[in-house]
Image 1 (cartoon, rainbow, N blue to C red):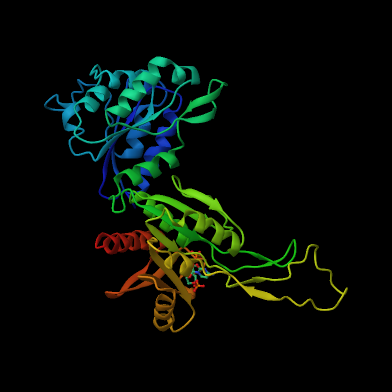
Image 2 (image 1 turned 90 degrees about the horizontal axis):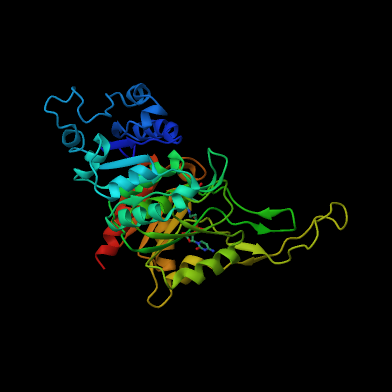
Length: 396
Ligand code: PMT
């Protein structure tokens, strides 16, 4: 429910991607937003107003002179409470009209009369997108502060390939959430680790752990929503990086160490969420170990570098945040880790609460004391932790 309490005007213009606006509307509502739909006359040729009315639970407007508005001021009344206007799909014609400041139908008039931000998700044939007139209009809109989402490249409804496909509804929603989130880490460069590492024994086997990457990925997403530029160094996990986050995929602790050190000097904040293997195999076999050849194999271990402690020891290095996963004595062990690694903040969790699943419970330890965060989805805890990091770094 990241959009709970938010009010969005969804403007739908004429294009085949208008059918995707129905799914976009569903997702906006699912995330808690109140949505008022307004359509151009062209859009109603692709999808009916009834579809959007049923999905939004509100009457849909497409005519400036709609008799349902008692004062005849639909363009003002409909948009005044909105947090933003989102046009998806935004046709080439509509972008041109907005770029010129035209007010020749209800939606264009609402856009001109708005007192809230405007986001547009263009969708059109690739030649229309590449046309110098469209390029000019889009540049003008960007210069006017309009946020342009996409378009994507790929196969188009007309059968041609190129740029002009509307972003998928999930991608647009993600940008809307990011756009509306408070910018607590605006402009900060956040470097993070997440997931497990995998230490090879031979070409098919290895030592790893049950970290799913969920906590770290949720934190990367929350930091990005808060306005940070996020680089995520990730061990092997089963999902892709959050939108807008630069991801460096690694496998072993040594690779993670190398990738982190390559970015650490430029970072303002470093957050170590990864469950890094403390040891790696010294004698990695070049070929698959065979049973019965020379008895039970002996695996010799050597210690991996402590990435967090190394970053924390950098001169003028980033503000460092560690994690500690324990199965008992949480406070004692977490505090000891914070002292040993010389970091200002550690987020402690019990493995039975947080390892692998969707939810977690955290206790934050810093110089000011102890701050428990209640059991909640990892996305919620991630936002709370970002708030706390913003508070601590804001004091420096
Ligand atoms: O991925 P999920 O399934 O969502 O689970 C999340 C989590 C439980 C893995 C996460 O919340 C968490 O607690 N991560 C830290 C795991 C841990 O206990 O690490 P540690 O005690 O080995 O290390 C303490 C800190 O030092 C961590 O910040 C770790 O990233 C860092 N470290 C450890 C060893 C090492 N060689 N280099 C490091 O940087």
